[in-house]
Length: 397
Image (cartoon, rainbow, N blue to C red):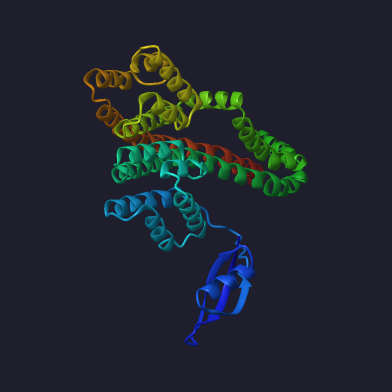
C-alpha cells in the first residue's frame, strides 16, 4: 500500500483534493470515480526523510490509555475511539500504530489479543490487564488502573536513571578533563621544563611520565572506555552475563540498595495491579517476573511460583530467596492470611517507592563530596605538580 495525493472535480464543478492509501494509482482514480469525482491529478505522496524520526514513547501510550478509558466510559465504540485518537495525535509514528491496531480490531480481534501482536509497544502486563478488563466488562476502569501503574512505574524508572546517570556523568567529565590535561597541556610544560637545568620535583616527574603514557597510547585512552561499554552491553545480552551483572549490581554498596528497593516496589506495584484486575496468581507471577527488571529478582519470583504450585504460601519462598526484606515478606504473609493481598501489596509499593526517592536523594548528597574530593585531588594535583618547578625556580632566583 502507498499514499497518493489527488485533485479532482465534483459534478458541481468544485475542485477537491485529499490523500488516499491504495495499492496503485489506478485504484485511486477508480475510487474517485465511484464517489462521483473526475480525477484531475493523482500522484504518489513524497516520502519524508527525517534525520530524527518520531518514535512512540511510553508517555504517548499512557495518555492514549487514559483517553481510551474516558471514551469507553462515555459509550464511544472501540473502533471509533481509535479513529478519534488518530485524529488527535501529531506523532506520525503513533498514528500509524493506532491505525494498525484499528485494522486488527475491525477484523474482529479482541483488544487484548491485538495488543499482544505489538510487543515492542505493549508489554505483557498491559496485555494481561486489558484482556482481564475485556473479559470482566470493566475495560474502562482497568485502563485507568493501568495508567496509574504506568505513571508510577515511569516515575520510579526516572529516579533510578537519575541515580545511575549522575555519578557516571561526573566521572566521565573528570576523565575527559584529565585526558585533555595529560595529552595537550602537560606536554607543553614538559618541553619548557626540559631546559630547566636541575632535577624536577618528584610529583612533576610522575605527572610528565603519565602524560607521556597518555600521548604515546592515546588510542587506548580514547577507545578503551568505548570498548568496555560495548563489551558490557554485549555481555548483558547473554544469559550468563546478565545474571552475573545483575547479581553484581545488587551487591554494590549504595546503588545496590537503591536497585533492590526499586525491584521490590516494582514487584509489589505490578502484582497488586494484576491481583486487583482479577488475573490468576500463577499467571500474575509470570508477568511480574518478566517486568522485574533484574534476573536475580525474576528467578526468586519464578521459584515462588513453583512453590505455590506445590501448595506453599507466597511469602515462604520469597523469604528463603534472601532478596526481599523481612518486612515485605511478613506483610505479604499477613495479606495472604487476611485475604487483603491487593491492599497490602499496594501499601508496600507506596512505602518502597518513597524509600527509593529518599535513597536516591541521600546517595546524591553522599556522592557529591566524594566526587568533589576526587576532582580536587586529580586535577588539583596535576596543576600543583606543574607549578612546583616554577615555585622552585622563583625561590632560587
